[in-house]
Amino acid sequence: MEIQFVGAAQTVTGSMHHIKTKNASFLLDCGLYQGKRKDAYELNKTFNFFRPSEIDFVILSHAHIEHSGNLPSLVKNGFEGKIFSTFATRDLCALMLLDTAHIQEKDVEFVNRKRRKQGKNLFEPLYVEQDARKTLEQFVGINYRHEYEITPEITVTLYDAGHILGSSIVFLSIKEDGRLINLGFSGDLGRPNLPILKDPERIPNTDMFICESTYGGRVHQNPLDSELHLTEVIKQGIANKSKIIIPAFSVGRTQEIVYALHRIFESNKVPRIPAYVDSPLAVNATNVFRLHPECFDKESSEFLFKREDPLGFNRLTYITETEASKKLNAVEGPCIIISSSGMCEAGRILHHLANNIQNPKNIILMVGYCAENTLGRKLIDGEKKVNILGDEYNVNAEVIVLESFSAHADANELISYCSKFDKSRMQKFFIVHGEVDQQEIFRTHLESIGFANIFIPKKGFSVSI
Image 1 (cartoon, rainbow, N blue to C red):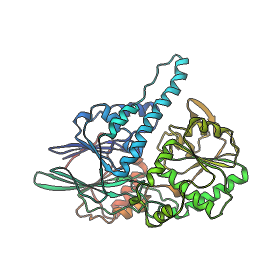
Image 2 (tube, one colour; image 1 turned 180 degrees about the vertical axis):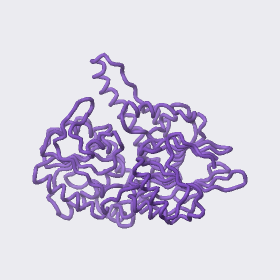
Image 3 (cartoon, rainbow, N blue to C red; image 1 turned 135 degrees about the horizontal axis):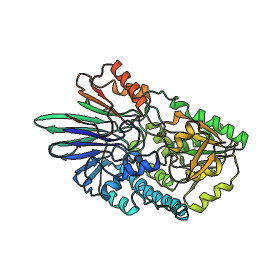
Image 4 (cartoon, helix red, strand yellow; image 1 turned 90 degrees about the horizontal axis):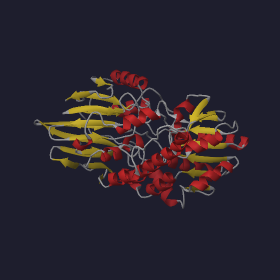
């Protein structure tokens, strides 16, 4: 058996790991790389380490675009196999892949209008909606904790990762040359005590584990304090009559923010102010949440299903139409605008930032991780000038970062999860989905509790088992 690390290797985006056995060739995840646009486009359109037509199947950990978003490219280039995921992940991908294709087409159309006037070569989208629709025909849903035989030699069991709706930790049993190899893949590991979702589940002991490390060297604010922190930002926004612009992933983070706002306003901690969710995808994804109570923790399940409308309270407006989105430019503060994408790389958030970032009264509230070279990361890092859709803007609005809303396990939570594995059985431990400084700290932590044979693979690194 051979494992090759194709994406999310010493970086956070583009999750993709290629596994070859004697009788099968398959991928764990097939995500979009996000970063500098030219580099990202080249990396995403080309599969340098394998031919898509030779991949037998894909196991998808969850629906976030850096894990699922390049599936249509894989299909477009010849992949005809099945894509295994939880049912909730499949339902979210039905929205997200089509939305990503649509955004690519519209963004390319917008940029090409400028390039055409400038006499420059025109861009093409990575894939189109037709490619995404074909991809969805290849999904196969699997229930949590249900052992599923993919081939006579390979079975998979998906456990709840507690990261976003439908997210899973993958547990594989692979028979080869008369031996059984158990391989685990964390996907993105969630946090205990997050609102709405269940805590991450334990998987059985493994011989090898591929583990994310997004926050391998950092400790978050307590998730139980997230509503308190958000309340303080809203109070500041009310006092200054600010527009509070919140870039948020349409799936997971948006629903958590809306849920927190509902609880804050319902408890009268602050006066109600207008709040808008400006994302067609978030509107549809919120409806998908109601279809999957198996993913909710007990408290949230009771809250979500006993209240009339916990994800759409009074004075909150879900916006789908483009014209309604444009009208938000004329809305006066105080108000809240939640829009995607969370890394500020595409979608309507770019237009809201362009229209509001130079006003010192306004607040840009960052509530999630942003990869290197993304616009969101530049805002978090405090850059004073940023490029948005080809134009330069001064960052005069106040940028506030709330890590308490993070859906990724932090350093302590990662170690707590991994410490329960049988270290004497663990032959190899692979650290992926993180920036190198975080990965090195995580490796040191793992070594301190008794793990050995820890690898931080570079892109294209392969290892034979």
